[in-house]
Figure 1 (cartoon, rainbow, N blue to C red):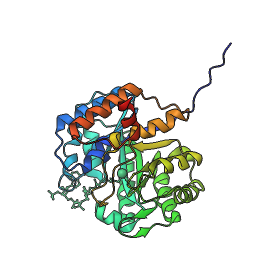
Figure 2 (cartoon, helix red, strand yellow):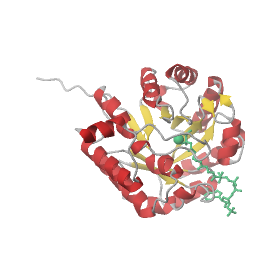
Figure 3 (cartoon, rainbow, N blue to C red):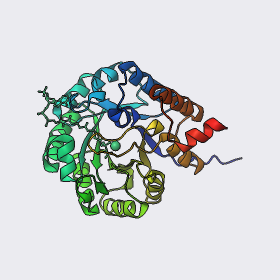
Length: 302
Ligand code: HMG
Ligand code: MG
């Protein structure tokens, strides 16, 4: 009898509809955002960040994310999450029945100030209040820490400072903390130091990697993270996006390339390759620009 060997699973959190589209210069309609997410559901993603409940003056592309959430098919096997900076954002997410939200701060004071107009301590105080309310409603809370290696305003960030902020989010009840390499300048040696600092305090199962690809290092940094035992990664289809408060930073690692790395290394991702490529083509047609993913390009030329 043949033994069935289970492949080790890696969780991919698709953040294209939020981290990707938030920074898009051209207008993207509500229907285009919705179609994008419906395509992603067909691919088999179990975790999709669908938008953010932030000020539409600060991030216009994310306006009406709560309405968008309300129009999506709800399936307990697929977590559709919303980014929420404060109680007002959480209330908007709760009002549409969202079961998972993400709070976000940074390891850099200057970035936190530019991004959410408060200090790191103030952001964590706000999140504590939100956590209580989220728990009362049975809603899961994910945490983000930006600028884990470099900050666009302060330069290099001490890995100990990253570990401190990560631990505070974990202690207040975030079930998973995503470490954001916001500006894509990191190399694997520096990423390793950040994981070492964090893993001395927190189990790898509660940590995720979020790598932007400005200098083409995201896949190398993800490989390093896999070596450190990390099994959750954020990515954006077609490498969409960036952060409006990190000038010049490019999008996340392309989901297509992350999928190629993981699937060819023998990890289970739960994604359907043909559906992934279909979704990839569709979003390229909406945006009318070349896809930066090497796998997407190679697949299409076959
Ligand atoms: P503020 O100006 O300090 O707050 O902004 P405020 O309370 O004075 O409110 C200002 C205005 O926003 C008011 O409206 C509020 O009503 C409204 P006005 O009176 O001027 O008409 N407001 C809201 N509207 C909708 N939803 C809300 C909300 N809260 C207040 N929740 C605030 C503080 C956090 C709101 C603002 O700074 C903001 O929206 N920032 C946007 C931050 C953001 O979305 N950044 C990008 C995502 S983070 C990221 O990309 C990094 C990540 O990917 C990881 C990585 O790569 O590193 C996660
Ligand atoms: Mg990001």
